[in-house]
Every structure is written in structure tokens, then in C-alpha cells.
Length: 274
Image (cartoon, rainbow, N blue to C red; front, side):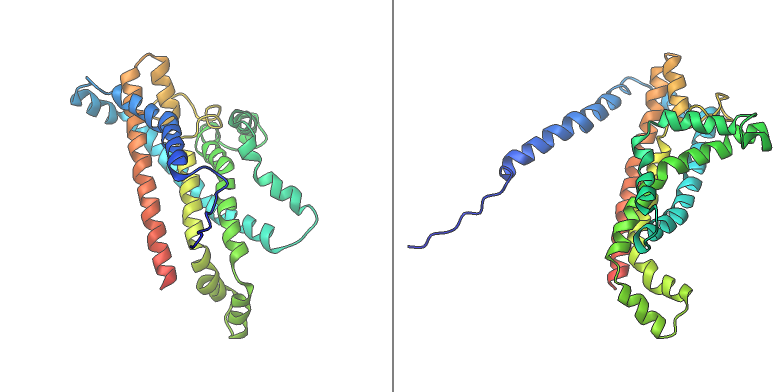
């Protein structure tokens, strides 16, 4: 007679844990999204289209996407440098600097918005040297989005750098490769998926940011209003259908962006394995 050893898991079986997962995701994610879609019932397509093609909505989308793309691109460059320094070098204050990276996670975004607003006011330390409109909007919004998006890039790239084999860099150097060739041929292909993921997370976070930009972005529709602020303005004016329509557009945009992120990661991994 054979006795089969039953392997016991720390957590309950698949059925119970899967049920808890589905219920939790349904309550937290699916039901709120379904409620958002239900608000669109009864709305005519003409009204839906007119809301999305309104000049103020298009201008807010342009400002939001442009600022988010620039902020995410800046974070990819400097986030990689920060992650590299924190991972590869030992220096006094390294632990403190590493902890400072997570500050935007713990700090309320409204607090950072107030601090940046003081810097970019017309009488602020930096704003006094810039045209008032420029200080209040373009530069201020981008810096706020850089501030809240930096940890996503650093914390995504750090594990990839830690897992990289230093021997490959030494072999490349011994074969006569320059620093730029070593980076482009050895380091970059290894961390490319992490950079793509970090860029995507920082970009997605910037699209929906409200707290840190509300004190910097202006309230002039069509000029200085970001999309999150425009949605709040619609709600304050009791124009719920228009607010839900814009929110639905951002929901679809986020879904498509996540799809592109997954496809790009699959493509990057396949290229790396080749």
C-alpha cells in the first residue's frame, strides 16, 4: 500500500482564495466601474460626442497628456540614474536618500501641491524669475507630475539593476567596448522592460493626478485646466453627465494604455530572449 504525502499550503485552497479574490475585486474595482457606465444610460450619442469634442475638453486633454508624457520621459532618464546610484554605490547618506525616494508615496499630494505652489507663485523663489502664466501652468504642472511619478520608475528599475550580472560589464570592458557601447549593448537590453514598465506607471499616475496639480493649474477652461480639474469643475456645476462622459473617456484610455503596456512588455521580453 502506497501512502501519498499530502502537501498542505499555508493559505486555504484554490477555491476559497479564488472566491475571495473575485469578490474583493468586484467590490473594489468592477462594481464602481459598472456604476460609472450605468450613469451613461439614457444619454444620447449626440450629447456624448458633443461633450468629448468640446474645445475645453480637448484643450484639457492636450495639456494633461503633454505634461504627463514629458514628466514620465524625464522620470525615466533621471529615475534610472537615481536607481543606478542607489544600487551600485555605497556612500554616506545612501539609506536616507533611498528613503526619500518613497516620500511622494507617503506624502499627501495636496501637501506637495501647496509646497510647489509656493515655489511657483508670482512672488515665489522660482516663479519670480518666470513669466507668471508659465510659472503657474506648464512648468509647475510638469514638476508636480515629475515629483509624484519618480518613485514608480526608481522602484521598478532597481530590482532589474540588482539582478544584472556585473561580470557581463567586465567582459564587455575587457573586449574593448566603450562605456557607451557597454550601456547600449549590455545594460540597456537588460533593464529595458523595467524602464518601459516604470515609464508606463509614471505616465498613468500623472494622467489621473489631482491633489498636487490643483494648486498649480489654473481654472481657465481651455487654457490652464487639466482633465482631473475639469471633471471636478463639472461635478461642482452639477453637470454629472458631462463629468461621467469625460471620466469614461479616461477609463477607456487607461484600459488601452494597460493593453499597450502588456504588449510592449511581451515584445521587449521576446526581443531580449532572442
